[in-house]
Image (cartoon, rainbow, N blue to C red; front, side):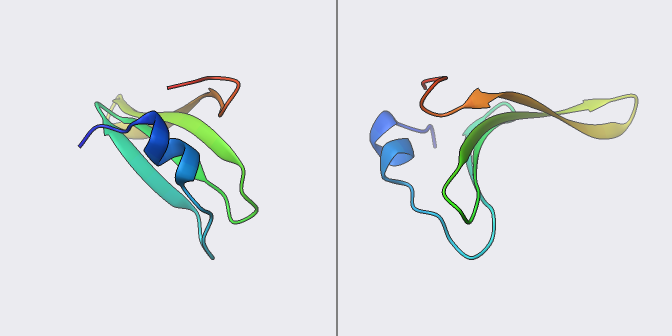
Length: 61
């Protein structure tokens, strides 16, 4: 299920990090303190990697 601007804006932090997936490896990571980071998960040479794409709302959906 794709993320919408309303889902991202209304996402609340929890006790642990929350990941809201958009598809193709892109997800929004929400920290317990409320920070929201766009991340991209991918595989390279058989290992999982993560790339930070920016902070929401500076980088919009």
